[in-house]
Length: 405
Image 1 (cartoon, rainbow, N blue to C red):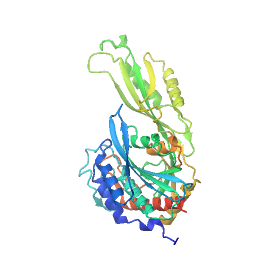
Image 2: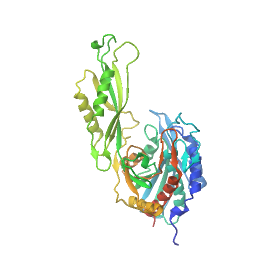
Image 3: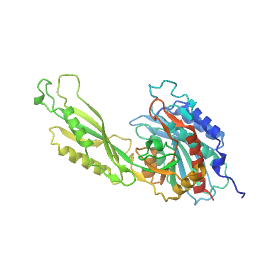
């Protein structure tokens, strides 16, 4: 076998950004990704990557029917590792405040604008190009499972959930997710950066039941809305755990609903509270902590602590940490050094995403490496074009080193 140059040298910057523009110009809010999914399939098929559709169905709560797109690059050693390279095609719902077409793909001063340009069509384009260039090599021992998934931005991450649930990750040894890293890191990091873990998340769904009375005589009832406010304040002040890598957990009341305009003391209210957690803060732990804080209030209302309804009990965003010494991490670090001429910054993700399903539920050492930008989930979202190309090159070289012969 003749010596071949680094895979990164085959990554064409113009091709990568043109692909990204094509992706951004296809609106794909979560649950409405069909056109973008078909585009990804056709692009992969046009580069002889033999893609397949993977059905995603959730009939009970959302009624969602969609499809992931998968493509496998096969190495020649069945005992070598397999990496799942994961990127989501959906965006948040299009934001009304845009002063231009939210799917323009306009490029100015090294920035490409559009809803989802940074989160995460930039990372998707990088992953697609890296997969194409890895498939062109004849010196891979291990496999790459490229997974373009749907519904990451939706309520349950149904695309990657189905990937795990249907066993596609069972034969994988590690994962790379090309989410935007620095903008959502716990620390101040600069690309190219490797994010090696993330906090987890629970959503408290709390029912408060008081007693109705005429609104002109509130002392005759028990106001569930007032007590819900007291519960929200108590939970916001909860003592949370800390982790040396992931930092502190957090609690944030998100919503209180209850009462009406009729002249009645509200007899019921519902409270939704976000709880970001670190390892050790399990479902039982966070439930017990909430119940203890509420009991200490000695309210007249009855308070029932539960969690957001989900399609299955095992759909959860658990925290995880990947070891800096894992061979995938060291391979990606070497790739960063080769592509950017310096070692990577290391960090940890502040919130949750598909990487939690891979790092916690699937138990895979998982690394987030992706392009940076600004204004994600809002008007004026953009991604740095140089970061997109650099991500493609780092992923290509890193996976080649990890999976190469």
